[in-house]
Structures are given as C-alpha cells and as structure tokens.
Amino acid sequence: MKTDRLILRGWREDDLEPMAEVNGDPEVMRYISDGSVRDRATTADNLAKWTRSWQENGFGLFAVEIADTGELAGFTGLAIPEFLPEVLPAVEIGWRLGRRFWGRGYATEAATAALDFAFRECDLDRVISIRHIDNVRSGRVMEKIGLRYAFRTVVPGVQQPVAVHALARSEFDF
Image 1 (spheres, one colour):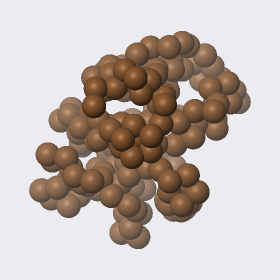
Image 2 (cartoon, helix red, strand yellow; image 1 turned 90 degrees about the vertical axis):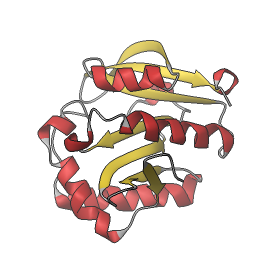
Image 3 (cartoon, helix red, strand yellow; image 1 turned 90 degrees about the horizontal axis):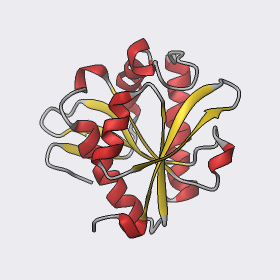
C-alpha cells in the first residue's frame, strides 16, 4: 500500500536492524508496556510474530518505509490487544516510528492508511487505539485520524495507566 510519502508493506529480513534500532531507543519505548527497550533477539521474535499475525488474522502490522529513501521508519497497522483483556474482542490500530521520523506527519499518514485498510479491506466494525495517558503525541495522532476518547484504565501486570480511543465503521469517512 502506498501513500503520498510512504510505502506500507510486509516485513523483510533486512528490516531487523533498523527495527531493532527503533526498539532500542529509550525515548521511543518510553510509553510502551513497562518502558523497557527491546534487544535485537526480541525484535527478531516480534518480526516473526507480526508476520504470523497476517497469516492467522488476515491483518497485522505493516512495515513503514519512506518512499523517497527506502528507509524503514517503523510500523503501523492492526493487532489484537491481548495485553488489555477488558477491551477484547477488539482490534487495535497502532504505530511506532524511529525518533528521527517524528514530527513530520508520518505517523498520521501511515495510520490513516491503516485505518482505511481496517474498514475497507478487513471490514471491521470498530477499531480502538490504546496509549499511555502521558503519551500526548500518540493522542494527537488518534484525534487526527478520527478516533475519540472512550475511557481510561490500567494495563494489568505493568499497572500502566492508559486511555482507550475508538472509532466505529459508521463514523469513518469513506
């Protein structure tokens, strides 16, 4: 899938190093789970899991590539938020980009395409997004792509305070 500036595609072996760099940045990982960075081996496991998700669910996380340069910026796409059982069954839209790609509108552009995919191709009735309550940047992306605040809760295990945002298919502007 292509947007004005991005290519959303499947995962390749050569994505491991740049994605490990993204996952290894403490500022990128600050609001994710317990805030721990992830090493190369964990990132490799993530890539395998994300690839399996496409096979098992018919959706998953896209690798986000900068069209002009071919650089891997990170990911966007759809996942089942098993870490927050109270919202299940649900499909979550999410994104994670390397810090050097922040502030350019890439997250909004990529997430908009993924949301369109969710409703047009996957025929989902509703999509949610979950963010740490202090993650203002992700909150802005959620607003820009049309998601609305639904409620606040805590992630079991890590006791992370999160806000859940949602958008119904009937509210999506096709």
